[in-house]
Length: 178
Image (cartoon, rainbow, N blue to C red):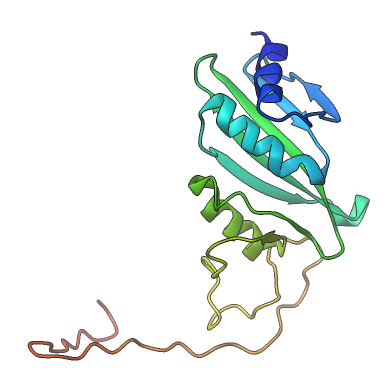
């Protein structure tokens, strides 16, 4: 597979494209490492060139060793059967990156999960609500996938039940086992 051709197709869509490294670890994978300031534009160029949604997006905590997080976004070049993985380093202090979610819908839930689990803020995300760790069971500001987490602390929120009112509405008590 011609990985240089795929990189050239991405470059056509982003004039400032200059990855720190381009590597092909496996025949069906292309890895691009870019600076944080180029991450958004590189992902947008890959999305356009490959006509691919975000297939995966994830982070890893390298805080203890390098005081940073690694953020990865994966696209699929379906014409050539190649996975394109774009990596960037996010600083450990006040970690954030520019959100792709306004432009690429498929990145939205991935970005919310990254924020919730690592505390890496997707700047400009259109829906920054918590995804799985709700306030009544997990205190805000505690990020479970950070390697430096030891004790979960903080006030828990109250769960508020929604009320439905109107003609023809009735409640059906189902008990503790449903």
